[in-house]
Each structure stands twice: as structure tokens, then as C-alpha cells.
Length: 127
Image 1 (cartoon, helix red, strand yellow):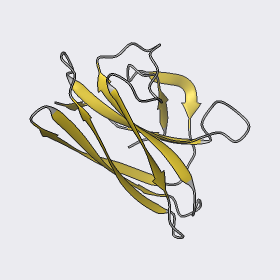
Image 2: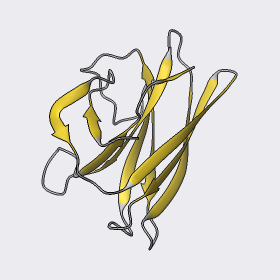
Image 3: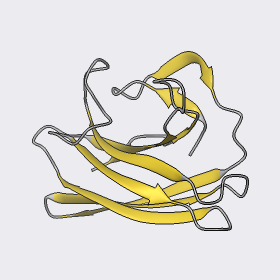
């Protein structure tokens, strides 16, 4: 996963990269009509921190919401331990017409609507 801010259609948002030093990964599984993401995060500089996680199905409009639960978006949370490590699983039913899924991890901004830290999938995984 990379520190690239993306719109809900998976397109990168220009000039919005992050300099965070954490690492994140997701393992995507498809079983019948369900997709599951096993999400892992390690950010030693941010122990005891909450992160929001979205599993987003594509295609999706860039203007669609991708941070609240709804058709094509499953949400969850990560809470890092004292070493800054966190794991969670997010799953959703696959919608008709879905060709892929990607994961968006973000630490909400304290004084802004923009996330203070974020990680997104390198590619949309085929389903």
C-alpha cells in the first residue's frame, strides 16, 4: 500500500501524497459472493492510534462517498497497540458489475476534514 490519496474511483488526487513512515498491506480473498480484506498496519510512531478502513468496490464514481458504509463500501476500524501495530478484517457482499476492490486506510484529521495520515492499495484487486 502507498501513501497516495485517492478519490473513490481509485484515481489519485494530485498534490496529496503523505510522508508517513508506516507500512500497510491487505490480503484480498473472494469466496462466492463475498470479498474479504485482511488489513495490516505498522506505524511505530503512532502507538495507540485509531484508523478508519474502507473496502471499496470499483467501478465507482469519483464523487461517491467512500468513507461511510453503503452499497459497494464496507468500513471498519484499526486501533494500533503500544508498538503501533494493528490488524482487522473487513468483508462485503460483491455487487453486480464489480470488477475490483481496493482498501483505503486513514487517520482522521484532528483539525481538518482531510486525513492526517493515509494509505491506499497499489492496485484494485480483481474479483
